Amino acid sequence: MSDNEQRTGLVGISTAAGVRTLTLDSPHNRNALSTPLMTELLAGLAAAVADDAVRVVVISHTGPVFCSGADLAETAAAYASGRVPVGMLGDVLTAIWECPKPVLARVGGPARAGGLGLIAAADIAVCAEPATFAFTEVRLGVIPAVISATVLPRLQPRAAAELYLTGDTFDGRRAAQIGLVSAAVPADGLDAAVAGYCAALVRGAPGALAGAKELLRRPTPASIGAELAELSALSTGYFLSAEGREGVAAFREKRPARWIPVD
Image 1: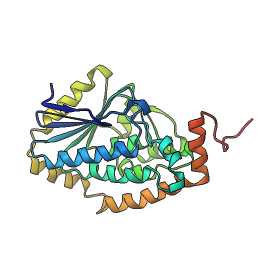
Image 2: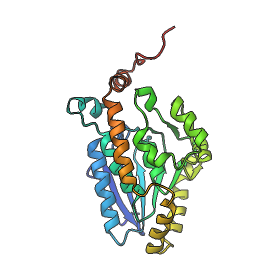
Image 3: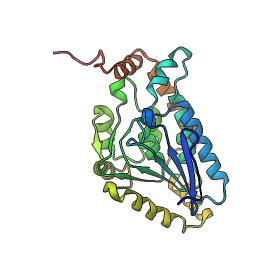
Image 4: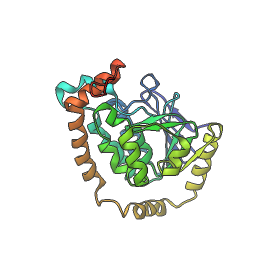
């Protein structure tokens, strides 16, 4: 039973035994990364960092889907302004990646595109074996630019090339094999696995954990924020391109995109 629980918006917040759980709570659109959801997630992360009683942050979800990626309905509506939601994703990934406290992703169901960026940004990720994953961007006429900052340091290069270019779906076991997640477990053992990791993490000294995280980040660019700003601009350009607009429209209209060959 959590010490407290809030579920008033798109991100639920609960705390128990030093573990702050941020729950993506927008099941009506499969926890898509809308601007409101990302705004709440950023606020939740900032509050967790500021609270000395919080030792570990868990990102979880309601509904059967962890995260379906960018909110394509909001994306289509935002074309006129030229500011699509994916531009904000870099801020979210930076906040997770640079969080001085351990961040664990609890993945009980499918994740697509931007949702994989969240998983890769977390220090530890545990998924249910039946959960499915896919880098679907090329099928929408865009590229996985923003999430590459967190995904590519995790994935085996050959697997990254295959999955980025094909957009094919893969399961939890393969996600563990290629480094996207730390472990894949039977669905009925997911919560126990997450609890086990959290129990181990809270045993670490807060300052030492933050220092260990800095060591783990040393091989990456000095400023992931700067890299993500560049990648966000690149991704936005693709979403606003003719192919990007057609891909989003085709997905929403449940029809093949115009570039798919017809026999």
